[in-house]
Image (cartoon, rainbow, N blue to C red):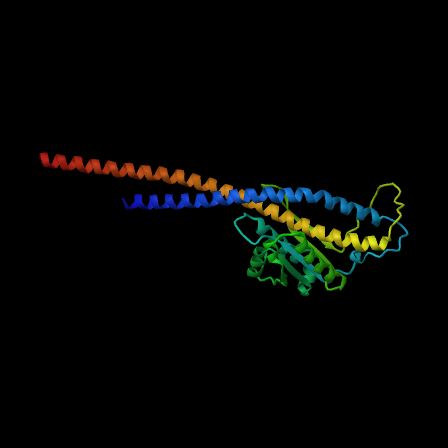
Length: 291
């Protein structure tokens, strides 16, 4: 009977866990819908802004200087890891950490050996895992998720732009999970600074008249574009996080249901065996009294 009690206790425990994972799945689903709507609305604007800047960059003979596109020796590199503040979302955070380690041991191995690679985090989980692996986190912006607004992220983008123009860093890369759907997140490495100029192969005439000036437009649009780029990356990551957590909790709920079925079957078998044993003992006792 002690075995039956253990099984009953375990069934109760798993049912309680299933309630928690199912509730977390529902919460993540609600957050995902909101985040998905936000990134769906943001992407067309961000893409169009980048297209405009690309076209402006193709203008020949202009005197405007783009300080955010200055190519340097890449001696000082900053990696910005965008993860989450919470776990229980499958390999979401582990993939970010894996990519950061891959960059420090591969593409930026020489700079890292010289101590010229800095790591900033948006989301505490990546920082915790990296520190456990012996990596130094130079700064974090983990509180952004407490109030995820464009203005708050724009403040961080301005700091990164300031670090670049002051030559504290020669190159800034962001690593994040890009949202595709609830079950799929695309691990993305994206150059933030210097601004990459895509060569336009179009034969159309880019003969523009700038008002008030090409320099003013560059100085205004490029910072706005960089702020939007970082906001899109963080928003993408947040949507991907909710999708990953919803998927993970859905799987956990299904696994709990399967375990409950298995434990219930074991309980019924053990209970039947105990009843059969009692019947045999009663029968044996009755036969002994007859004798």
